[in-house]
Image 1 (cartoon, one colour):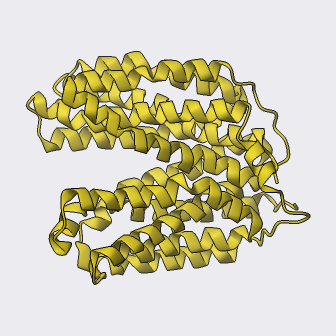
Image 2 (tube, one colour):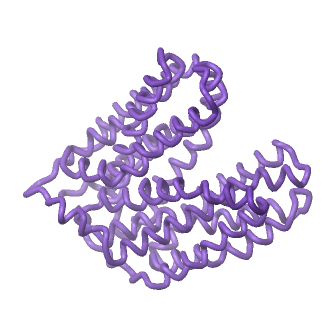
Image 3 (cartoon, rainbow, N blue to C red):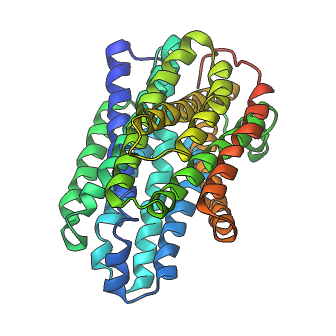
Length: 384
């Protein structure tokens, strides 16, 4: 595949990063709107929770399958249609006539997100300089992190005002379609057996490491509000702590991606699995009144999230002929799998305490580090 010059590559990467921001902003609206959805559709908390599960299924767990479809279609269409579909489904949540149709809207939105992520990650990888793949992957990842922070702001306008944001997905999709080049597969299509062969060897261990790392982070952030509440701190301290965590995640991803271009992918993956553990433990036994609480939270969050874009690039370099599918394994499939398992952290908290559950979650970084220790350093091949 011919590569665009640097300015073209930058514009493509920025276009899909903008798509990532808007797409993930839409996805982050669902949770804060759960009480409003429950009130409007007169359903139980469990039913509203089901919406999050449906969105996770179609946007994350099924992402490798959507990546296979993306490998067989024009990625430009996938990258452009993704934010538009996600926005269409989630900004119209307040206008579905029945809860069943609302569920279908949320599923449609999830498919949009699931189509976008492998296509966007593939464009970023294919059009970034070979010696800066980690940096550009981290910028793409930071777009999603920023979008996740923006989503609750969108949700703040209320269910019936959300369509004013729906046009953003259409505009961003149009911009993406204009800027990104056509990317139709050339030559014979890979067989399903070949696709299944991607998920073997080091990619399986890399995926296992990513699942454990994601579950450690999810378990910690899920327990944190309960821990702070039990110590007498209110919503403000929790919101500030989670905001620090979110900003640090973006910064850590950027630093990790850039350092992996010079120091190697695997050293960053290994360090990000080991170094944060004692820092998080120190945070758990501290309080927001102590001066080191927020700095330690920032450093620990940056370190644990430094591996996210690096893991994606590593998978792409392990499977250079199938970058979209490799990306989806490390993004949606690993995050979605961890999301399914995180309820076990809640079960443990009910049986013991939120602190014990958080520590057990962080303990998963140890087997993650063992898996990272077995990974070979990937070559820097030409991607396709």
